[in-house]
Image 1: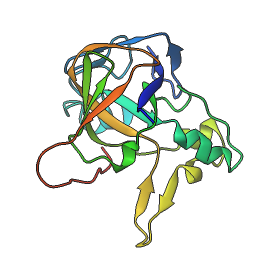
Image 2 (image 1 turned 90 degrees about the vertical axis):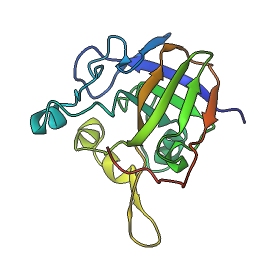
Image 3 (image 1 turned 120 degrees about the vertical axis):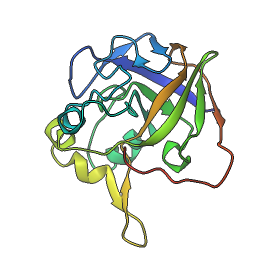
Length: 180
């Protein structure tokens, strides 16, 4: 199966869910045009409270739609944009990619993965019990976060549902994703 974009979304305000869109424009070094999390420095409220001058490693949130299928088995219903992601994907295991992987979204835009989304209590406010469904443990007991990945924009461009996703792995050793 070819990896593809199945949904794009943005929110002008700091809302948990975003609004689905026909296309979004990624701006180099900033994020999604018109989105509350766009900027060179961190925009997530909890991170701004700690240090508003931190670099924004969370310019674009990507979420694998396969998670929707997984949580549906536990009685949850989710659709693109509801988990606050900007880009909903299909056919790519985002969580298995190493740090600094580049994804070309469509014909122009390129993002570089910086790390995992760290799920927060807002997930349970969205649907009670969903937080536990997007977390797991591996055989060694280490926490597995399944709520998507965060990225920065390396090359701007428009992204639309139906766009293909091309993966470029970084050179050097595999650096597993950690929460950013």
